[in-house]
Length: 365
Ligand SMILES: Nc1ncnc2c1ncn2[C@@H]1O[C@H](COP(=O)(O)OP(=O)(O)OP(=O)(O)O)[C@@H](O)[C@H]1O
Ligand SMILES: [Mg+2]
Image 1 (cartoon, rainbow, N blue to C red):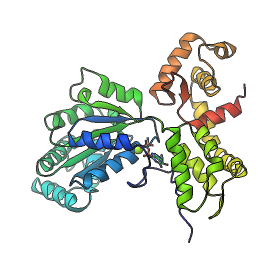
Image 2: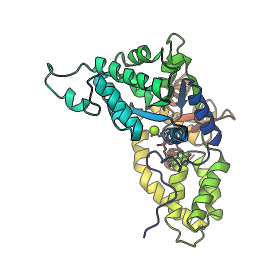
Image 3: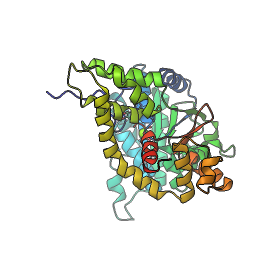
Image 4: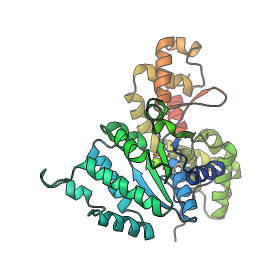
């Protein structure tokens, strides 16, 4: 039988596969128990969905049910209502029964909104009214049993006219009844949604930032994944940790690439690392190139300088004819899109270390 890799790196992890992040995990569980409105913010593929799945599993042990609504790339009120309908219909066990029965008492069938919206305009439900009813079902259920509502990819709400307003109206008097956690990866959109004091309700949410993983945690994940599968990683752990720069998904991808080359009972060697790195580069280089071509010239210059470890206001900037004004605007935009991060040492870094790696090879200094 082919042994599954201990380093899955596509999509969210199942609860139980989430490694490290213990403090954050406990903090999020406590917040939900205390009904503290919370927004979990972090760059793409940093593990937001994974950790929230783990938090949901932790709370399930205490009798909580979870309704998971994915707001990815919504563009209309119908999409938003559809996301709630799907989220509520895809629950399991007693929660599923309770939701269906409550919805039934309001003459609603869960999980069929997509079909209903495809009917002729005369027979089609009004998505705004439907969404209101769905949220009311959730609120009523929360009066009977502990409930967690996860609104993942919440930045998607910004594309729905009146979407945020409607959720606020429906939830603002009930947020003490259920645990609500928003998650999102677009810092600029999330800051507008949650940072604006003029936005009641959302601005009450505590912002919790999901940062890069500590190097020691990445090292422990790599070593234990190899050990669990009867292999040893000591000689390559350092290379993985250094290149990954705390990016959880990239760390797993690099670890997987090495793991694939090492037979059971074997020891990962620097030669394996070289081949693994070449394989990963071959897999991601073309998307790095496309991404780079898509950004404006000022952004490209900033990315080149930051990837090379220089200062966007220093010598490297003057070599590239990057004015201070352009640099400042590009840095703000790239921080806002989570392409750049500013670390505790004050230094800017690219969020995606493999994108930085491609830029360094493409534009050697
Ligand atoms: N705690 C963790 N332990 C091990 N791997 C992790 C952890 N968190 C994230 N990862 C890695 O990152 C990948 C992406 O995780 P996940 O989908 O949860 O991130 P996300 O922030 O929700 O991403 P997106 O913004 O694309 O929705 C996982 O497949 C896994 O490889
Ligand atoms: Mg996610």
